[in-house]
Length: 241
Image 1: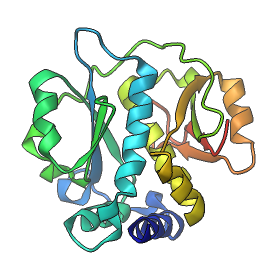
Image 2: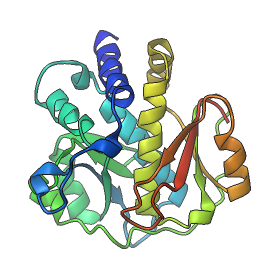
Image 3: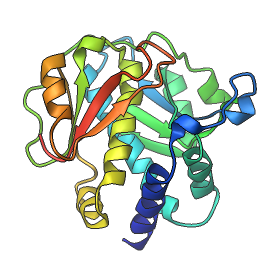
Image 4: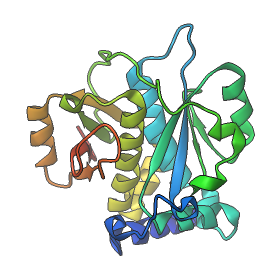
């Protein structure tokens, strides 16, 4: 578990020692903009349930940030470290069929054949196989997943924001990594032993406000580049439902 602890330490330091809002990104200079790309497997035939995709994306992000290689020296940890020094920007893209299969060879983590999370990079350096995946048209209809797992973290989404599945996938990814950063090393080890099991649930604005007020709640506020107004509280991550 030593590599996990080191990966967690690096994540915690990145989340606690600076504000990504102070990041000197220049949209006119792609080399200054870092992002983590997320591919969502959304086949035309028999598309997956929205909640399954969102849970896979959230787990994929935290699994990548706390991967064994993230606690060692090398290109994997360097890519994460570079991204940690910028905004926690994530970009969700639609994949299917051959395009989905092709990106499996690129460095990253796949969860449940639903989502693959790639090592972050400058946006100008996104691999061509990922860059050609469509950013739009990632929506899926709301589903009824039932109660959240009782013994695992939960990430609540403010359903009143009506975010697309792609936007919501990026937001729950923020939630899972920031929740991990707020945990102790021992709690993260316990979570890793459960393969980072978690639930994602979309709830009313009123229920969401109550969740955000709970002790230990990790609330994600969006920069407002797409779909939602700046500083909107999009998701709330909790250790238990």
